[in-house]
Amino acid sequence: MMITGCSSGKSTTLGPDNPITFSWLVYDRVEGKVLDDWEIFKEIEAKTGVKVKFQVVSQDGLDEKRQIMIATNTATDFIQINTQDGREHGPDKVFLNLKDYLDKAPNLKAFYDNYPEAKALATGSDGGLYTVPVLEGDAAGKGFNFIWYARKDILDKHGIKAPTTVDGFYDFLKALKAQYPDSYPLISNGIVGDTGLYTTFGRIFTGIHGFYNIDPLTDQYAFAPNQPGYQEMLVFLNKLYSEKLLDPEYSLLTQAQWEERILTGKSMVTYFWKADLESLVDKARKAGTAEYDLDAIPLFAAEGIKNYQYSRPIVGTVGRAISAKVKDKDRAVQFLDYLIGDEGSNYLSLGIEGKTYTMENGKAVYNREFGTSPFATLRKDWGVWYDLITLNNAKSREVWERGLSEKSLAINAGYEQYIIPSPKQIVKTVEELELEKSKLNNVNKFLEQKITEFVTGKIPINDETYKQFVDQAKKLGSEELLTMYNEAYTRTYSK
Image (cartoon, rainbow, N blue to C red; front, side, top):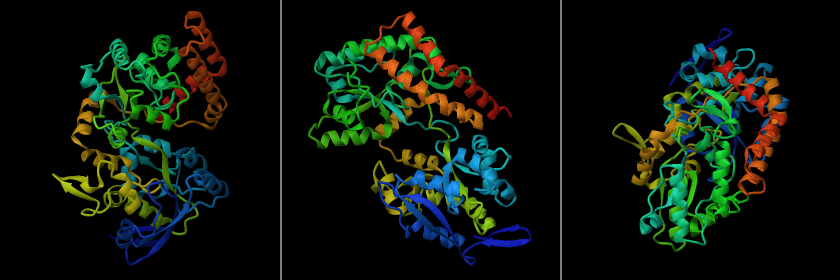
């Protein structure tokens, strides 16, 4: 492969006869440490002449190291940063303006053309492009992460049918409790975040995922507690709590406690990452419950509320940047252009054909011996699908899901009808970021505390107490934040 570029009258070539070394900041993942001799980088060097010298830090020390590099303008040649840092510090000549090189970087140009959201996130106040945001989900917005789990072996044993409505879900939990009086059928992994109890049921009762998010019916940001149905959600969760259908420690559980209760049958229903379903089944069976089985139950929503789940974000919050101080700017951009193109992207996301994946009916599939969770082997032994290295998690996920078990493929097919594209990210001004920093944490803490008090019965749920709840949130800045999110969203995508 020969790529030629020209800047300031000086011609440079990226190729095996013109070797060059670039530094690259990474951290060691739990699956395996970063290695200097991963075969994909030997192949890349043979094609491009580029040798990558990794600068390795611990995961715990990564953020601090990155911020020091940004503050002192000493970034490695290649570095993964938050896109906000790129927008903020790129114009200060900390990161290279990729826009100046697009005439000789066809893959980069095509990337920004094909992903307007990525371009918006990469664009600084001066109009320059400072990062290549990492792709997380397929462009069609159909890949997704979460499902409702239930104990299939128990449902089959007692002839309990999966619910499809909110009332049906309540009856479903009651039926499980009747068979297992000492259990708490429903358990949650946290109260906020994508699998949190308040996030999940907020969407079920209001159509808003989380406290703030896009309403898919209006394409505008909404504040979930302002929506009709949020008070009804509190009443419903309080009923589950009062009747011991919900784990009474739901707001305090650690990940380990959540898993222990799901594996032992203390709880039987949860909403969680679909990728963990089969590994949990395997753990339970190895622990002695031979009949243990989990399966997905349908997504459901309150009457009149859109029954949906957002896909994985198509574009991530982080992106690859090049230091503005890199010695050979042309070849650095050409190398990044190569890595985002088909061949380079395949090395980072898939590995080496015949060694980590094969082609079946024209489609890539990871080697079967890597199992249904191939990412552990791919990361440890090959450096494939490795954080801070890959640029396209979406490609890896597509290939991984193609090789899933029949059960997992059936779950994907069953949930496909509910999945809609994830909201696009917004670009905030410095003033908007300051507003968010000063208000959002206090609003979130207040909401989490008061909702928990409503659900656990410490505060009675009625029109008066609910109005006090919303009014106090306003005093803390809930409406200011909502206005800001909508203004920023409109501005970011108004073109």
